[in-house]
Length: 526
Image 1 (spheres, rainbow, N blue to C red):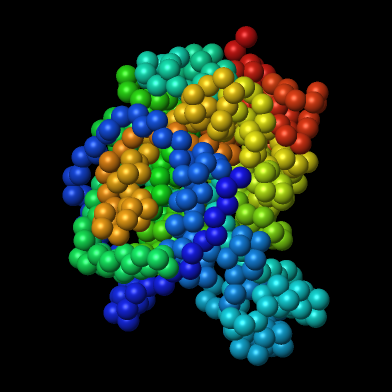
Image 2: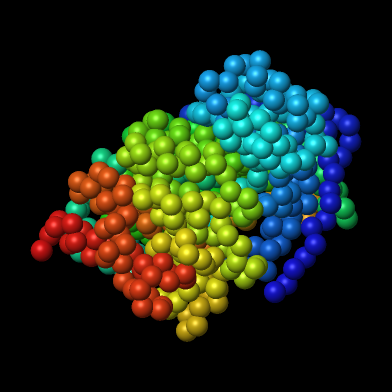
């Protein structure tokens, strides 16, 4: 496997640095009426795990964002510790415990949608050591403590690409389920916790600082206008009210615009508009969608986002989704490293309130197969399921993380897939035309502001693509009347199509999700 070493970069010039530091918000002109441009199908396999293009993009992203955000996923983020104090502990006792383990430690104001506190510590302190000391030496005051870690993405209707390209949906045996329920998921809100979503028109005016990749200098872009449009296979005049309670935890506002295209693609698998003679189809194509941005990208950094993806942000976003009515949550994201009590508690909380959670199992099988923290949590919670990926031959996708916590499998695609052209082994949905968004991959002379109003039918692969199949299946079952997340998990487990070693195994869990079998299994039809 080709591996390239990220190049350290720096923002150029004091003025550029000051501009970046001062840009704590976005200047947005909303409702500008931008019409999405559709270029059709793009046979681009650059979003397949391990492809040369995806590795090159990762190198560029790491270089551009060398700001401490891109530390290894298993390495603790400096300067903070997550703590849950005992309810009976007095404020003075809490402050004393913090000062005892960190000379400069202080309790920050509690963030929204959190049942925990953040402790600010010196950047030179070891967050893992301080968390351990709080638990061991101050158990009378501290119920639990942990360091914070970096999170990342885990990459028969009349729609023409359904018939010709979407091998993945027939594998779920959806057509009989759609016959039973012609408007699948119409009363269900699905929260997509991801990079945001292309769900509305907007334009952003911004100053983008100069940067270097260590070899070439990329110029500052001043007073540029960046256009956005809604992906018209997700939101158009026929379903303008489907978006519910959007929120952006990266920017602390209610405008979770997608700068990466990942969240838009994931949302398409869940709820792409279907039976409209255009493009691909979605699993539960009538669901309402709740875009929640918890993952950041290069443009978030260059535009000055105040936050980036961490344990506490993910935990808060999970609670936000349930607080605002989401009954299905999809998390096509994850990390390796130590456990996260705040994320596990958040998942337990929302499952206990009636929300089913689908989680990508991880893409790191070929990189040592480390335990995926988020997926592993699912094995202890009935009503949350970790989803492995299969390829077009119904085999284990080469990248898909395996382990005793894998519960079910769904199509994630792979590259290459024996017997098929490269793109035919991946998952197609509408998202951005990356020739217009990833302009930082060009040479400096060709570099310019991105456009997020040009769309294409793009091919992705990953457990990120597998998880939304299960989220969509859960929405169909919930629409049919199964309101218990544990009952949904039981139905999906019992009716899955066994793959690999007979019975449950570490590569496929209980097998390939089968929506028709699940609906018949609950007595929806005979």
